[in-house]
Length: 441
Image 1 (cartoon, rainbow, N blue to C red):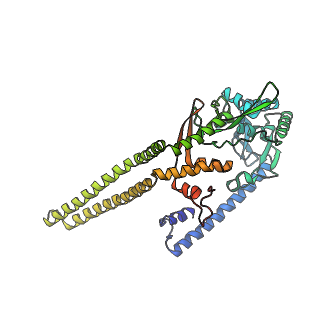
Image 2: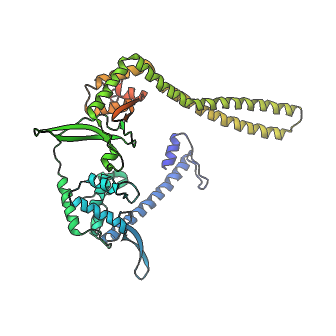
């Protein structure tokens, strides 16, 4: 039903060769909707029954599937009917990693420290990836390692995601062998509960370039970080940085910090925008480079369009040639009709492709920007940077800047990006539509 609806929006009619209905007629559309309703009912019935069975399995301590570090699924024959049920058996080498993670956390080591140490030792997750702070946290909060089965922690995940968290999930003793002891589990959970208390932030940086700067080593987005240094007089000083997201999440075994001072990065970007605005030579170079990039992307299409023109002219000359052969009675009427039909089909295919290319070329040419347009946008951006809120500044910079390259802890290049829709919806003068000019002051 969704496919047919989307095709209809594109003015494409759907016809089935296995069922006798056509969606361009009222009765055909009705037949499809009836079949869809029956199929939807059958699917919902299967889903309901499956959920009921899985809930009952979980309540009886049986495993409902999924990959967990430390275990692997195996089939066990149960009962007189020789039913095969999946159960969990311990993988010794993976269980050793799990025990180490719990022991490190119980000894006071934080999530990042654990991830860093485990990654340095060459261990990987069940899927073969490096451990992150999130994957470590998921392990130490999973009751499966203490011999329990937890099910239905989230309901309707496809629609509600984490908002559908169940306040009272199924949690019972499982039929599998635990990897860690109750004592170790209790100690780790107590530590996690104590760390979950929200503390007041001692520093609230803006970090307006988050997500724009890229790590020069691994290419990951650079995120906010800070250090607190204690001076000799007992006072403390807070320093803000942009650091590699992989380093902050997975540790130094994956990447290095490659930190860039936040004050330097932000002032550099703002100053560079001012230079582009007030130095016409720099602005002209930026615009020339951008337009040259756009034109370079159209060269293959232009070549293909030229080839299509030549082929269409060749088809027309072939048509005239066959008419001449027919007049000279060198070909019969049937041969002429068949050949003309083939040439017609080939010409229609070429004309259709020609229309596609012309549309792509016209769309690409609309992306070309002129001098006054860019200067007007950057001029307004310069004013807004000093008046807008932190979130607005972030949004504005993401609209104008594509990415920022870093090298040797310094900014190497700023890649700008301009879009007509951006000017209309964010920087244009306000109109009757409240959505326009959202950042205009």
